[in-house]
Length: 245
Image (tube, rainbow, N blue to C red; front, top):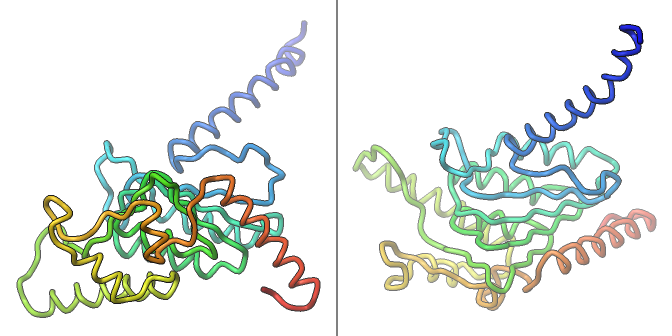
């Protein structure tokens, strides 16, 4: 056997190794597997662990980096083959501005989007959970609502507290605009005392999140995908009829 023939035999193995390497890198960097069906018209994005902002978190923390998610949302918006976006959350929260940036990106998509809270959608995960066109929460999933806090050095001057208040108002305004909860109710949940051991706020379980108007419906992955497919069909009908719904 010639040297060229040996190279030809090795090529498929080399290609397979490259594919495996790309898969491992995708899991390590983005924390998600490639789509099971590449021809699917739905893009699934996962937001897990802690949302990392401008500061890099310790290596033992499971994180979702906003600089990874934003380009993916832009790509999904531009890709003609992608007709709907499913956002799955199991997050403890994290950086406020990073979380709001992701939420704003999701809410401004022109394509149908559905959010699904599995496990938890805590803290700054709440605005992300309500940012889609329709929101679902698993029956056993929870959402912790509490005031914004600052880490590190805090200068005790009025400007610091004004800054905190303005940032909190941004969160309140976004949540109340993109869900059915009233501002009064959301602030009541946010400032409630006696429920959290070392903090003020409220832990809301699935059915309560729907009752308060934070989330639209109780449901899992089946219900979320069914709703997304219906929204895609409505959008197609609207475009065919001359209007976008």
